[in-house]
Length: 110
Length: 115
Image (cartoon, rainbow over all chains, first blue to last red; front, top):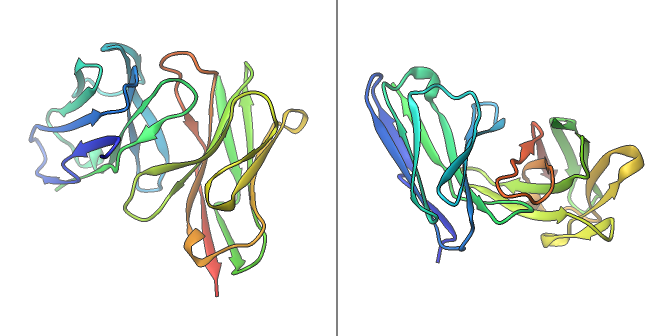
């Protein structure tokens, strides 16, 4: 069983569209995250949820809206996609002391 | 505030040679330190971590790292490189195990292993 799974793995869409990425973890962790990896492979945190509550919102445009329906799920919805949103988005989960990452979603905005 | 500096964005070694990837950190509280590996088109896999206790930590695939508080370093080593070690390596720091503690990553080091 995959510990942290995200769908889709690849997402190609036009500017201005709205898209969602889904994430699920079966590790029983309390905390989930979204990270963005840019073209230079730099990883930066976007959001963190603990027990369904938002605890980190790292100066991300409000076009990005995370939603956590329960502890095991953290979805990312992106409105009005822009070229600069093209990146790999990683979901992760932890129970303190490190994190387990999903396989990533490569978003390409054309 | 916390930060990580990885010295050398690219490291190249011969198969069988020592691997040394350097990481220095800054943290206002006792840090938790991590090394992750990323193979092409894949997610990040945890290699090893330091939280408390023994400063020399061993991880998967023969890697180990030593926490040196006086030098604020957490360098990653492996005695003998394999071709399969070629990947991107990330050092990361978090400020303890509090719920929701963020991981702050270095910029990564691309390891190339030459035959």
